[in-house]
Image 1 (cartoon, rainbow, N blue to C red):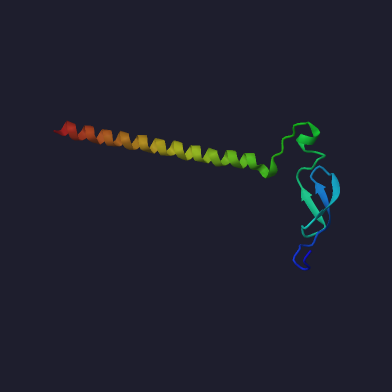
Image 2: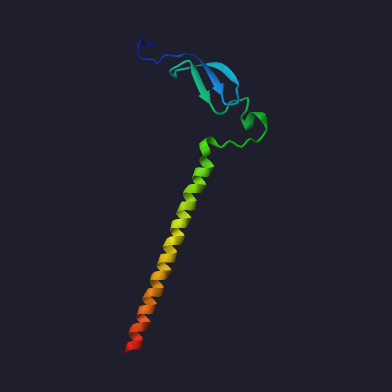
Length: 97
């Protein structure tokens, strides 16, 4: 191996959100690495389904698309009101003739 070009490869402790810890080797800086899932709690390894909502992603998604739906509804209402006003104006001009 060529000296001086390879990253530092050292032992780190992996800490899972479920509390399980184990040691491995990595090039990550620091002595500890935090993960959300590990083999002790991942559904593939445990056979149990587990719902994980990291940082409210579901709520953020629902909020985002609820705002989009409201904006679409408001735009449709404004368009309908504009059509009704145009129709009323057209009726007034035809009735004056």
